[in-house]
Image 1: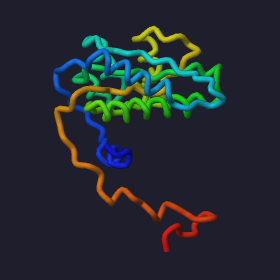
Image 2: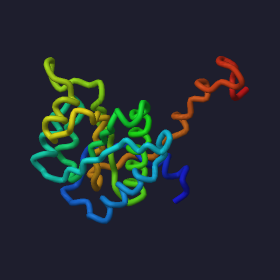
Image 3: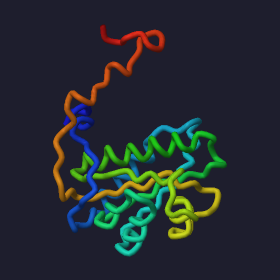
Image 4: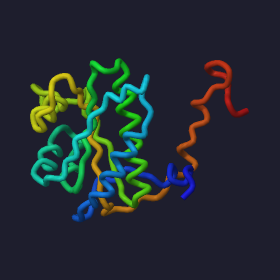
Length: 179
């Protein structure tokens, strides 16, 4: 499939079939993340593959909007060692997006659960909750969790309405890109 068609057709899905993701697919997802660029090639990321149903249910309680992880057969927790790179957020985000695009290419669906700067409860951040649940060292920051699996819902491709040309300037801010 042509790359731009992949971009149009990939949609976030939060309901999955009760069907495991093959190990070779999990390895391909991780390989796609390893192939992502990082600042000065520092590669500060660390990925935690979760396929244990009890852990997935617990992760689904990390924050509001994470409930889809309860039906996902797989989650990849994207963390990074902030001491290795001052742009760990960007590096880990690119790797996470590579995982989502690779999932689609493999016939899977995925969705992003934002963890950084989100709350689990009034007393605890989502990051603290995930860190405790998965025994993540303090120097590793938790960016997001990517839920992955075979979709139990179908969504139409993106339409032309997503092209917001009014949000593009040419040569200076406010100058229309398209006349």
